[in-house]
Length: 392
Image (cartoon, rainbow, N blue to C red; front, side):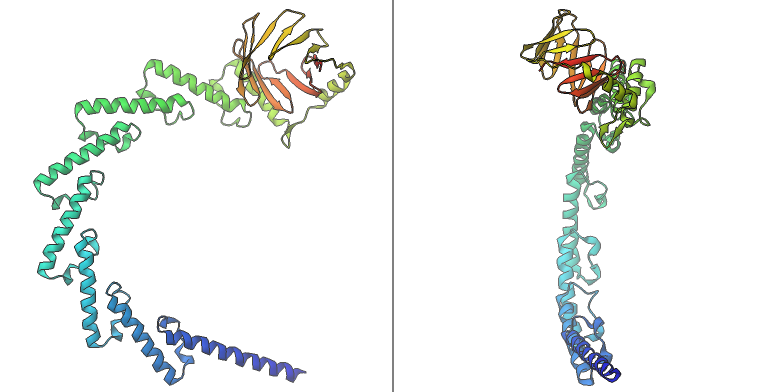
């Protein structure tokens, strides 16, 4: 048994060696990848053939003239070297005569006549670059005539003015190239762009308040407070909330929002045991009527659906008008309830903020009152115990 295993191993090794030798031979005879050729695996005649192939492929590269770095001159005959020299000079002249790549041009390979042609080409291309006005760093002004320098100076001033008048890139604006009138225009442009950044309220770090007027500063301060309040009221970024910018009422709202945020589990609000007990205790009081009307079982108030989104409190006589887009107005008191998106509401008259907690629940961030959706359209004020029943 051991003899059979040994014989199989020797046979396999022999086959692999032959296969490796065949692969190596094909690589060597290709001539393109001499660095990968293992000459020690070749016979003497194979080595000679491999050398011929290598010289043949090297000559092709050399005669192209473009890749002198890759050309192995030691493999060339004297006659071949002469042909390669001509090819390299031809390709070098093409590169130099373009005028764009002076740094790559080997001027030592040029004749006196060719050097003059190349010099003209380089000046021509340099003038194009300079006359654009945008690339003064790349412009070789020493190659320009006095008349060309004036044209280039005008072009650079023109392009610089464009950048400056945009107002956004004051750091790139070369103000020493501007006239007094242009400086005044640029100053206005920079102030206008700065005001846009400042009035957004989100990027106070980027706002240059020294460029603002007194009235603009007041507007910007208010904008920053509004954006800060939005950040704070989310309840998620308490470390980023600037509490010194909040009013006492807003601080109370934010505090309640943060408490609610901490009570979320897997994206849903989980009420405390106290809240659960209130729900369980009062569930037996629920009654369901009809037609979209609602009744507060604690106070006895009856809210009638008038139609078109309007409601009327038959107990107090208050009329709530639907103004569209989710906005409501109490026609008796003048209070305006604005829909601020995401299910949230704000009372523009009192400043109270009603946040949508999800699942139909709401929270008054000003008073801390929590309005829970019990189901079937019924609501419960978990702070006062009041129940508002849907009469559907």
